[in-house]
Amino acid sequence: MDSFTYVNIFETKGLEYVLLLCFWALFVYLVRYLSSPAKKRKDLNR
Amino acid sequence: MVHFVIQEMKPRGPWLTPFNIISIPVILTGLVILYFRFVYGLGSVTNLSQDTAWGLWLGFDVVTGVALAGGAYVITFVVYVMKVEKYHSIVRVTVLNGLLAYSFYAGALLLDIGRPWHAFNPYIGNSFGFSSVLFLICWHFLLYMVAEFIEFSPVVAEWLHWEKARRILKRLTLTTVILGITLSLLHQSGLGALFLMAKPKIHPLWWSEFLPILFFVSSIYAGLAMIIFEGTVSHKVFRDLIDPKSHHSFDDIIFGLAKGAAIGMFVYYFLKALLFIHDKQWTLISDGWGYWYLLEVIGFVLVPGFMFAFGFRNRSLKTIKVAAVMALLGVVLNRLNVSIISFNWYSQAHYYPSWQEIVVTLTVIFTEIWVFRWVVTRMPVFTSDHRAR
Image (cartoon, rainbow over all chains, first blue to last red):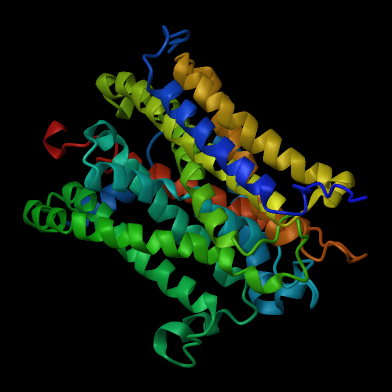
């Protein structure tokens, strides 16, 4: 009986691709987060 | 003219300030130590050995100091190439900081070379050493210092009331800025390339074939964090020299710098993570070195990166200033880890800097601050328009 061979993402480049996808997704989110109108200034104590 | 310069050389302001009381004894002690260093050699005042040839003077003064001076090329690029006028008011002080940092920290390289007179060989052709990364770094340091001086020279001409010279020098600015940016890109990464050949000696968590890129990317946010830190201190200490409009606009400048730093740290963090996974370093993070690495990458890159973004979004100056200090500590930690702490990590005999090395390092820093203070209290550094004074 044939046994299953699971792909080990730690041994392949799978995890690197996942990380890159996360990077681009989060980068877009970060740019949008930093580009949206800022909240009211909390401290201008000078 | 001579009379004017002599007048300007005279000290101003009170002598008994906390900074003077601390710095003068340190500088005097440092000069005495340097006398012994040059007369009796490196071994008389340092803990350097044949196994550990590079110590605190190179690891902190040169490798770290140059990274922290990265703000000059970032800001001149933003102002003169990208034409973002918002940051124009900090160009002069940032360029001055860059010029002094390179003059003192790159100059400190001479202290760490066993035979410092050989440092001129790559320039005068007595064995150029084309195949060495140091050849690139030597020439870039020299050319960049010249470029920075030309960028700053309109301020000197303005101080000396040389109007014609100022106009001519001002025309050279864009050319020297482009030259300076090109040089910076290469020698910031070149400092990382210096350690490529030390693969067997540096702990695998810190060595990577992408060290040049990591050094370059981290120099961007290190420079921005340094501008925030130095600008905040300057706006307190030299408050009388800065017009009130600049005080107010500096807050907006800080927010802009924080935004840039947040993006820079985000990119750097993911580069580190990618290299960590690519090199399959999972097994290395379960011991003391691993925890130390995680502290650097998470505690002093990821956390301040989030703080910059949070501080920008919520307009919190305090958060941004704390993040700037943490980011600076992170860069210092990273450079020291690569050049000193994880160097010869497997060896039983670890290198610790001697007290003389620490005093000389403080001497370099304090002397730079003295020169910075002398320049800003005499030359129109905190104003962007010479007619405003």
